Length: 92
Length: 92
Length: 92
Length: 92
Image 1 (tube, chains in turn orange, green, brown, yellow):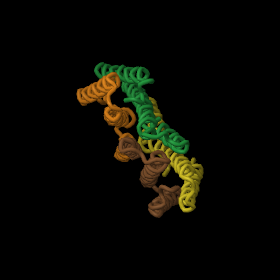
Image 2 (cartoon, each protein chain N blue to C red; image 1 turned 90 degrees about the horizontal axis):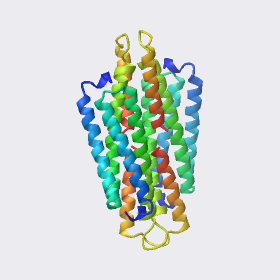
Image 3 (cartoon, helix red, strand yellow; image 1 turned 30 degrees about the vertical axis):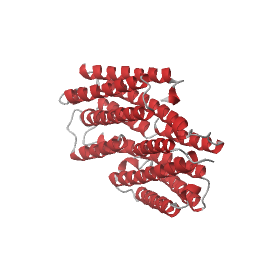
Image 4 (cartoon, each protein chain N blue to C red; image 1 turned 135 degrees about the vertical axis):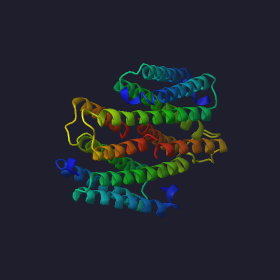
């Protein structure tokens, strides 16, 4: 996962935070907590997951689609930026 | 969470399965696994989360929106079914 | 469509605006316009559609799921508000 | 829009079909048709729009992100395929 070496710690931290959110959800279900609370927990975990997903997709596009043997042209970078912007808006 | 008493065990099981998926994702990030593998794990966890979310929303609509002091009419039940069908298709 | 009688004109206006956006998209495709422009037009039309969709779903929930022979309790209204809030956030 | 020259007619056809669906929606709102019918029309138009959107994004990725001055490597093509597969599954 070359493209995330730099941000690796940040990604792990975010994934661990989601892990904590899902654990809280499991507990809330086990304790038969209020349905609204459960939906809130679920919704927060899902939002964090979408956000991490779009981060990973961005990294994948930048490192593995855009960069091969040769440097991408500025047009390619601009096109990638557009795709990334749209993917991010869908995963909100 | 009255509306999930019956299916409570099933929901807990699914939430725990998601917990396992997120743990696998954290490990994959820590082990710097291949980016494609990480995206697959992420995507599977996200799918499972969306599916649990739509299940919880369905329960919430049926138990808390539809059912109050009085029994809902068959028209209300039919309208709820439509909403649930659409919510499920968006959360796929 | 009882629940939209009041807002009827507003909904029609919004649907017509989407119609205009889709017509602009068709023209842009026919004129072989720049790919980025086409994606922008498409994306704007899709956003407007999602927004109208969530409006219609909200109306459907409030008028047809919540209201039957009897008035809904305040708990039912609160539960409906939660569902509507979540549906809206997914359709953004 | 070089990347869609071949499929240009197909894309225009699909955009025109969406135009027809949105026109039907406007009419249904004007005629105060049944709320369920309106939601169905809306939902079908939205689905067709998502499907066209993912087609356009795929074309954009393949033609403008992947292809620059040099031919992409097979690894880049494989990475693009993964991104496209995920985008398609989100826009369903």
